[in-house]
Image 1 (cartoon, rainbow, N blue to C red):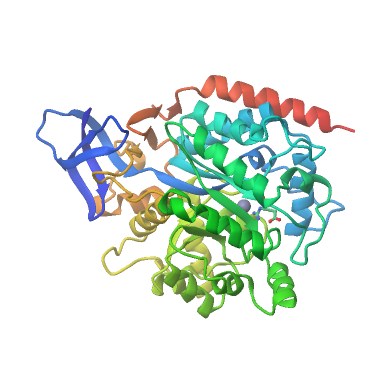
Image 2 (cartoon, protein in one colour; image 1 turned 90 degrees about the horizontal axis):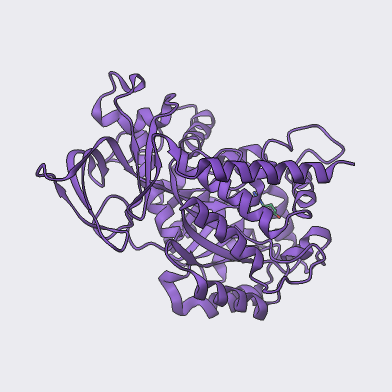
Length: 456
Ligand code: NGQ
Ligand code: ZN
């Protein structure tokens, strides 16, 4: 199919009358100048945003942990609430919740997601038969929603840096290294269509050095095909614990292993020294920034300006899904810097003075890398994942062409997203997902039952 995009954000900025050819493989086979024979698409086309960090099940508890309670009012208290929620989830529940979260992502402009999946076993800790049941359940949610999906089965082996035992809900997360690699291999073998597979190491807290090395080694042969993601240095307490245990800070420790390369995504990396920032930038890895969740959990703030100056790559993730809107992630990254530095328009580069366009393009590129894609954006060879913004709406009146992406990110544009295409197919049209009714009904029934089951 050939489309004529009225306007499109290409690597060198917004262009008019762009022809794109959608190949049978779901990628752009050609991007060039339109000649008028193509099917016209009004509005502004942007590359779809990859969401590089999701725990799909947490969608169903977003907003329900904002109450003063007996629990400690910190990240660690929130984690206890999350653990209680996790105890009740079945594979069917996970499919329904994930499908809805992914639908909301598509309606907001995320077209691909990396699912950091650590919930593996039944509530007793015994594996399901087959042991891939929960992972396949989350993937089934992705298939219902039609989102591009990188599944990252996640290794989790201990309670903290010194090999502490797993307690309570954490037993659902546990695998020894051999069982974990089996899990990864079966999931890699069963991936079809929009699906791919990588690995995640939950954190340095949860994965000992030997297992870290074993997983990196076992998956190295699939290099580009097998992204490796890890949570790191999110909380100040985690940094202190790591220093007491190893004499090093978490990012410093991870970089010193010599394992970190371009196929890695360091999620959060909130608490970093200038030397650590440089180290991440030079490794070629992507920093996975989840600004709305990090703000919600009181993690701290990532020095994105210094990181960009060092040449660092980043992408964005919705993580706990307190927001499912990529614009809000970008805005929140930039506003954190503005409040901190008491300045404006900070994330830009010499070629792109428009803050919104710069942030958007950089996060698309970093996100695509973290999802294992060799190229990104509306370019030949990249996945044909894009969104179309309805610039005919009154909300866009008077906006200069070069500022359209800025206006998309930094001003209210409710309902502006008209279409989302994944792999060359429209999954959102007229602002609504093609299967919204069925997916929303299943989500409503599932969450209502889960909440009723939790009542005393
Ligand atoms: C997670 N979430 O794995 O869902 C974590 C909390 C932990 C975030 N870090 C659990 N945002 O880190 O131990
Ligand atoms: Zn996470």
